[in-house]
Each structure stands twice: as structure tokens, then as C-alpha cells.
Length: 320
Image 1 (cartoon, helix red, strand yellow):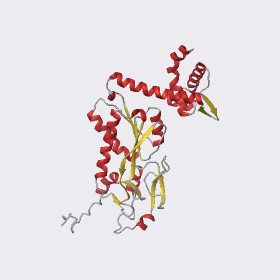
Image 2 (tube, one colour):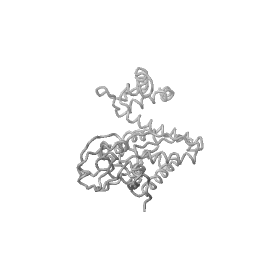
Image 3 (cartoon, one colour):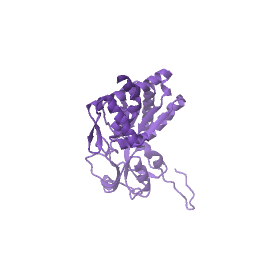
Image 4 (cartoon, one colour):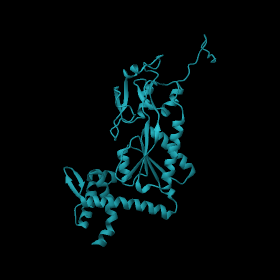
């Protein structure tokens, strides 16, 4: 029996792991591009060979029992060991794909860091995913991600989270907004205007870092902090943006920074599975993102573009 089980186990485990993660045969089949009948048959073969059930049925969902949890954890560890073994057998850890996740504005730091690493190691094949902390942590646990960068300290079993630094943030408005052309803007003026606000993050905090003790008018809720750049440029509502994101648009006169409220800086975190600690490509990637973060925070807060004086015929007059 054991010989038969070992011979066929690796054929059955991908379906088992997908069912364990998705919670149903139908969802697992969609992920594997197979029919539900084929996935259900594979699960049946596995359970028959084990002589035990690995799932309990709860309504329409399949939930791992104690035996299933033990098998899932063993499969995860085996997958990570296989990946590590392949890298070692090839003699070069950079030949294995580097799988990195980030969210929204942080992608502006992560992609340049990946390109920097790619220039040094042309044989490296980076893979980037734009996902939130909870989903990223699930993939880290399953060995399907190497590192994830996000705004919140969201922990998970066997996932190590470290704070890298902060991004300065401020309130901004676009050219069409009533406050854009106002000579003097006070705190009360800002709080009287509606804001576009990103949704509450996986840690229970709003993603733009707005202080919870300061009430504000909610005009719209969005999924990603980065989407607020589009809203701000439209002039429809006020938004909180990382200063590094807003700076180019402030320089061109498309956005105005309203420094009448102290908006807390936005934290930046990196998460890895504990087994990835010390892996050279991952460490180099994190160092590259840290350099991008240092460069971004070293820049002064953006200033409004100076107005161009024009003469009677519309010709620009040089500033004195």
C-alpha cells in the first residue's frame, strides 16, 4: 500500500492543495483548469489510498480535518524544499523565478527595484503580483511568493514582517477643485470638503493613514490608494497622497498640496516566509526597495509650481 501511495502521491497532491486553499472542488478545478469531476475523482483516489478522509463537509464547503491539516503543512514544506533543491542543483539561486507582490503606490518603489536587480542579474526572471496583505500572506505560506511589500503589518503563521520605513503624505486637490485657487486655505476649509478615501485595510486601519481622531467628509470610497491620484487630478474631491506620488503633478501645476493638516506618514512593510530569510535574491530585492524608499523620503515635500507673469501681449515676463 505504501509503495502504491508514494508512486501516485505527487499526481494527487496539487489537486488536494488547491481544494484546501480554495475550500471547494469547483473553485479548485477552476484554478487548475480541470473539470470538477476530475478534481473530485483525484481527491477520492487520495483518500482511498490514505484510508482516511482529509476534509469535513460544512455546507457547500470542504474544511480540512486534523489529518488534512497535517498533510497540507507537509505538502507546503515539501514544495519549498523542492524549490530550494532545484536552486542548489542548478548552482545559482538567481535561476529560480523571484516572485514579488506589492500594492498600489508601493509598486512605484518595487518595479524600479526589480529592474535594478534585473540589470545586475540579466538571467533573473522576476514575477510581480499586485495584491493585498492577506492574499499575499496566504501565498507566502504556500511558498508561491518570495516577498510582499504593503502598507500594513498583517501577520500570519510562519510569515516574518518587518517595517522598512515610511512615505510622507499630505492632502492634495486638483486644478478644478474650489480650494485650488484659494489664496489662503485653513484647516476648517479642508475638513468641510469631501474626500476620496481608500477602503479599510486588512489590519483594520484606513490605508491613507488618516488620523482616526479627526473626522472628515467621505465623498467616495476606492479600492487602492493609487486610485486617489486620478480623483485628485480630476478636481472632484480632496485626497491624501504620498508626497512622492504627487510631486510630479505639483511641479506641473496640476495638483496643489494643502499643508494645513499633519497627515501621519504611511508605513511600508516587507513580509517573507521564515524559510526565505537569508535567500540572496530576496535580500538583494529588499535592499533595492529600501534604497528606493530612502530616495523617495529624502526629497522635500512638493511645492506648488510658480505662476508665470505675462505682459500685455501674453508674452511671459522673466521673474525678478
